[in-house]
Length: 106
View 1 (tube, rainbow, N blue to C red):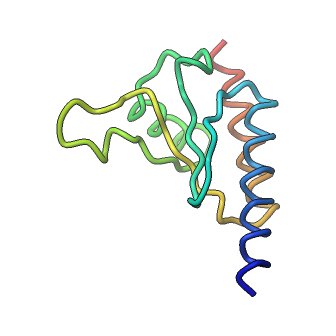
View 2 (view 1 turned 120 degrees about the vertical axis):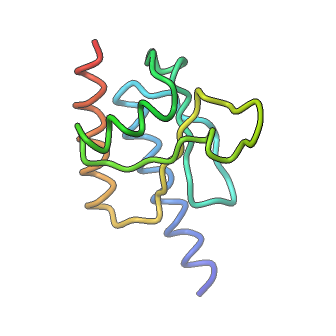
């Protein structure tokens, strides 16, 4: 059972990473977690993590977590993370919406 779950999560991680990379996002390597991180400046996005996360909720209907929320001092404000423990259909919609959002940034 555990091996099946691991394979399912790896497939979801790889699906989301590939889709985001195709859309122009710089995705950081991920292992042993349910999250992928995006490097905003490396993706050509001139927004901090909180602004990006607020905008994608409003404009793309996708939720992400600003990594600065985990830092009490000297926060990293250039990374956001997305959960990939979702169905393929949900991941595909998120990829599509995030690709369209990125296209609006120029």
